[in-house]
Amino acid sequence: MMVFPHQNGVSMDAPLSSVGTHSADRYLSPADVCALIPGMTEARLKMARFQGTGPEYLRPTPRTIVYSERTVREWLEASARMSTAS
Image (cartoon, rainbow, N blue to C red; front, side):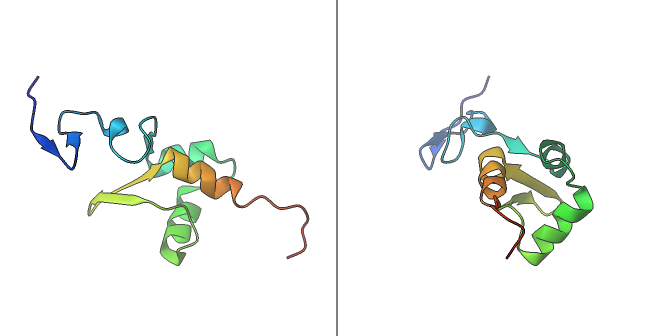
């Protein structure tokens, strides 16, 4: 295994899951997010991303979108409602 020098305090050989604010955080693909949330489709998730109403996401490359599992769960829990009234 090659070991690279630290960058921003994180070893470059550290797994992706250890990078960021929470060491136990996992990164999810849009399909993973849809599997986590009943009724969510990739099309709805894409529209929420476009409208700025969905969970925060990361774009490490121009064609790759990933979500922090923690952020998705927080976004989902923030949508809790007590009644159908606005």
